[in-house]
Length: 613
Image 1 (tube, rainbow, N blue to C red):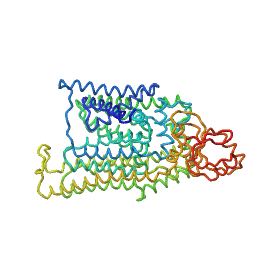
Image 2 (cartoon, rainbow, N blue to C red; image 1 turned 60 degrees about the vertical axis):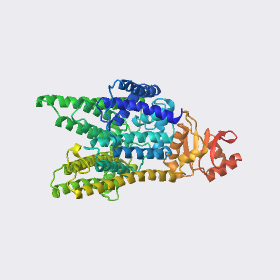
Image 3 (tube, one colour; image 1 turned 45 degrees about the vertical axis):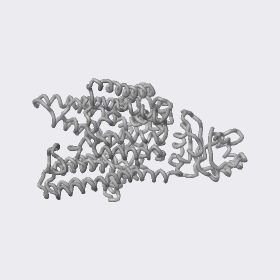
Image 4 (cartoon, helix red, strand yellow; image 1 turned 120 degrees about the horizontal axis):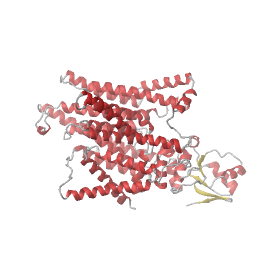
């Protein structure tokens, strides 16, 4: 199927869910991400029942049917959507979103974790049409929930499987979540506050620099969906039914992204409970019954998909990597001495206090901006606001997250990884991103309140206190707008630069010697890699497993052996892939088989290596 036709089918289905949700009262700024999460949950049910491909067809075609239904109903002037208008941030989102999408479409997958799990999971579900089982050794991290993989699988089902289309799918999920931040604006016609949120969205990618958008890892997906969840609770605070439905959907989907979403779900749950209490109606004794009932039932429904997943993992796999288990945690903790724990703690505190830490800089930035604005408005403008309280609240969240992250290092990671704080900035980036957005929304609402004219209908070019304040507003808007565009453009050029720098990495070398396999198999493939580090950390093996879709691909660098031993080693495999020249392998091939082999993909025969074109 042509990729553009497939994209049109997918988009039409998404449009049907979007329109239906909006008619049910969902905010137009939250409708896109909500529609995607609803589809993820639908696909999850089908996948758990062993009907993934059928589920993709039904889910998409149901969306198209909804488009047709509302279109026909529109002829009778029923069910027409209220037009929200086009704002400056819409142009920013569409223009730079398309530019980023084009860049990602041409981007290759390079990061290690793509091949150890995230990309291989998508490939597995795309070409097998099911979740992995106990006999599918290709998938190593079997306890990882499949939410993002399901979403990407649906997208590539229609547009065609490739690195680029998978990356575009994940970016669509991220961009739809990012669009939800504009639900937090008081007045969406104000250019300054709109561009301030655009700038926040652009600068948030700075704290994702360890991963960037050209990867299928979920370290940015988790916080941006959580932000959308929090803004939805804020938007629906006066609508109890929508509030509960929204919270349940987002908790259900978030917990299916990754186990580490638990911290974000706790944040969502706390804000949800606060909103229920603060906006409860009726007498106190009614609220005393209604609030706990709403809270427990909503959270319970939201956690059902994850509980189902845990049951599935427990009953499908005897041993599962990164599975949540108190027994495993106690075993891990018992295996480390007090001295080792103290070393990890010392290293952890040292990293937190280091000004070279990107996450620490982010925390300081958030505090300086919020507290600085609070001081200015209190001392100079004599206006009260809650920015100081917001800064304190976000700091409490940071401290709590530090505690949970330290717990992960001592409970889940081997000492060799924990002592170097493996992935620290990557994990901390997630909490900096979510708090950055929370702080930004609080800030722009205060900035809006500080404007001279509070009646939105009366706001125009004349609604300023004096000419000076008007000039300050206009200059500020131009500056913030310029940086919003520049920072996002910087992310796009940075991704292009990364792609160019990665031109000679192992995954791209593989593409030069062989076509990727799409049929799940158990062929024994030897990846000959001259880079010792790629072999020792299993990167070569994981790339081979993903590329050749086999659970028996192995990377090897050391071939210091006799020709006879070399021949015996090669004969154990069905295929040999040589993405980069390996001198020792070339010499031994000449001695053992009298063949001159430099690079390429070969089938192993009793008499030598037969090149496969």
